[in-house]
Image 1 (spheres, rainbow, N blue to C red):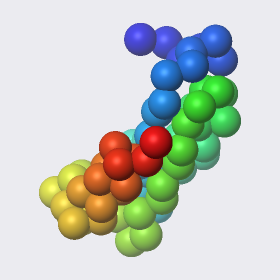
Image 2 (cartoon, rainbow, N blue to C red):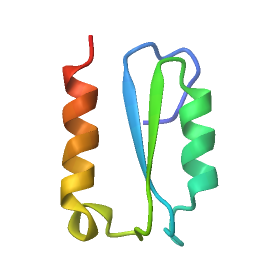
Image 3 (spheres, rainbow, N blue to C red):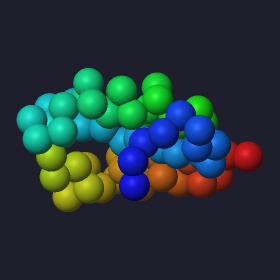
Image 4 (cartoon, one colour):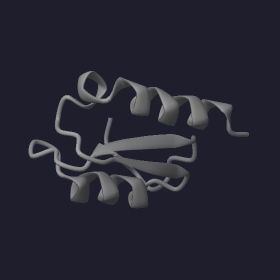
Length: 68
């Protein structure tokens, strides 16, 4: 699904600080293009973010889904 500024549903962009496949700059661009996006950057993480830092990813998701 293409990223479009007309989307209004909440979105969460979880980015990995050291991801070479999908650099942070692309995630920042996506988060700023969406109208209702939050962005979280996980430090010292690479492309396999959920496997490398599962607790941090879960915390970001939990926080996102618990917010009003």
